[in-house]
Length: 191
Image (cartoon, rainbow, N blue to C red; front, top):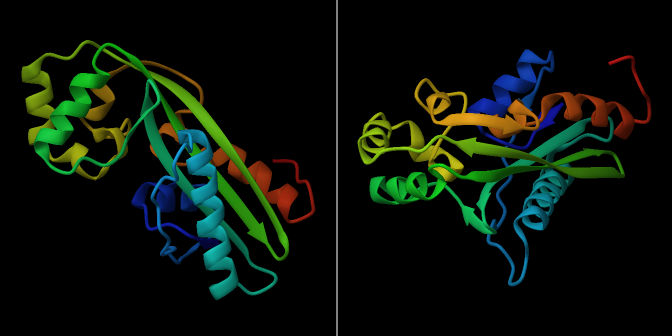
């Protein structure tokens, strides 16, 4: 199986699920199109990544899994922070509110390409400026959409509750991927 992502979190989730993955990141333009909503964007990007890697690197019998995760607050995309000030801005915006984490997933096997979007609601505690500054000082938020990682040592302390798949917030709804890849390959297993 080929994983069209270099995300350490996705690689770890795939390997923990028992997949021996070859990592081949896709090189695509990830810019949003005018008028494109966040959920349409993540599905389109996942499909584009899977198609690019599948056509260039996959043998007909190989499965390619690609994913893209975004954080959206009131329709605004919160990508990876540009710097510490941007991380603070995002964390202030998320403080005490519920936002959505959406992961678009695409599974390509031969000519068959299937995709889906998984959405999880995440609610943050009210955060003080001191808490935000301390979290940003750890460096943990700097390479993560929305400036936080729910699985991180400090990031998990920000989240009051979630409604949906925890692993989706980490970056890959792994149970749904396992189920979908068995269907994409044309067989259903007992998983």
